[in-house]
Length: 240
Image (cartoon, rainbow, N blue to C red):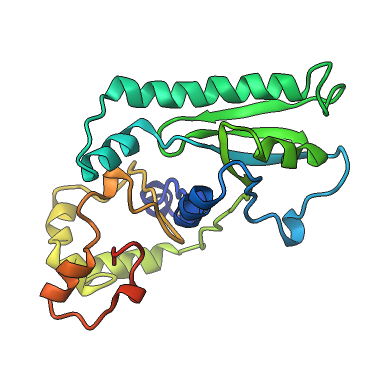
């Protein structure tokens, strides 16, 4: 493994949850708090026992920045403090419902749980390890929009020899003509080779409502202005 490859591809984030965000929004609008569980099939199917399982819980409110963006799209006024309080209320409400479920009068009394991570920026929710037979109860919390299995993805970086790296940097175009268009060779002459750069890759879908992708997607009307041969059925909420 060469140093260039290691430093240039330091980290790849595969956000599997973002692939499901659109379907979650639509489904949770139609059936709020009806135990929306997504992806628990095959090897991730839930057992009807107390074996521990780690899941990702998505709360009702979107992250604060997403709330602001969506409010702006609707022409509504929303302050950052209110949006952040919505996120805070979700977390506090979840903890309260969790305490009730595992409390003396709860259906999961005597069992244990562990909150592994709290999420407030990219998504609003938690990673939690709980008994498998309590997942359905948690999915029905007022604070919960949906639950997902904790899917871990590992990318094996190929073993690239130094000869291959040298052949790439000795050509004018490198791996593609796009590199020449970006004048990457000029940057290499200056000593910039991407070492120490962290790359985050959004794979298998994204939440197109996230402010980070503002104006990145064209509406149906904008596509038609470009003489694109598409109809509304080719879009998601008229977004292409």
